Image 1 (spheres, one colour):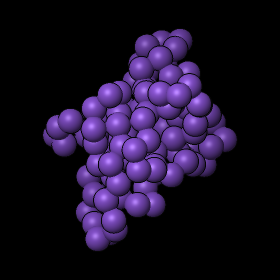
Image 2 (cartoon, one colour):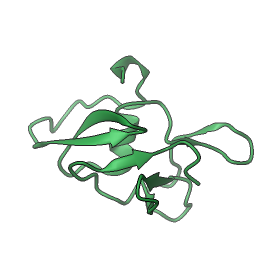
Image 3 (cartoon, one colour):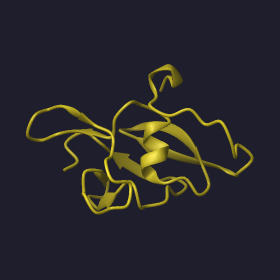
Image 4 (cartoon, helix red, strand yellow):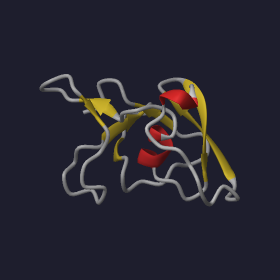
Length: 98
């Protein structure tokens, strides 16, 4: 995935151990300690699209209360991207994740 299309740009703490994960079937990278939300937004500009309006969503409260950042893992588990740490080999699905 192209960094030019990401929402976030890492400017500090680049020394942490790398983690590989899959985002919508494409291998991507993050750093140990990153939330799933951070990992996704380092790769693209949104976490999902609203099921009501179709508008892109990129998280809102960042503490898990608003539930705007739900995504799914390929195994069907629903996770809050803002409060779940990305793990090695994690397979995240953002399309139709709500």
